[in-house]
Image 1 (cartoon, one colour):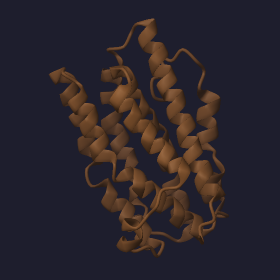
Image 2 (image 1 turned 60 degrees about the vertical axis):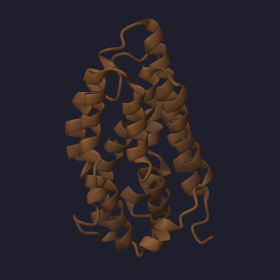
Image 3 (image 1 turned 45 degrees about the vertical axis):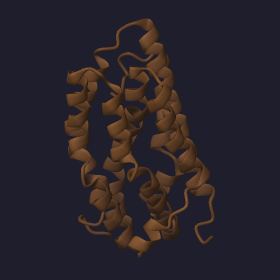
Length: 219
């Protein structure tokens, strides 16, 4: 099952499958995606990953419920240090820290980032959880396939792809917390808002991946 499946009011499985089997990931699994695109993805994902602590902090500060705050803190802890693993992946592709520091976001990356911040500023408590949680969940599913493919097709080591493979442990610790948080939302109105947030999260993430594929990595 995927994020919030038990309470969604729409069938979002076709959209999820589009994300899971996006040409970006299929290219990695077949070994046909050029390394320049891999570097571009690493740089664009860095723009998002470096916002992770701020996004989690906003979610925590937005709740007045101490139990919810503790659960959100528990979600943050497994992700601490993840940005270092992305830097290591980039270094394996020939990127420097200066490259990461100088990254300019593409339109899809900016749109996804802005969506997260908008939801955390203006969404309901359920939407706040769903907007980021749905994105985390789908990326975890992607990472479990992509880590081995990067080793198999691009000659990278287990250490160099740990940014992807580490998501298995993150999933084991984050998924139960998400389930406890989602159990608080049982009304039809809550379910509809959460469904909309999940759908939009997936649609903006799809836009992000499309932008990476459409961009010229040499520019």
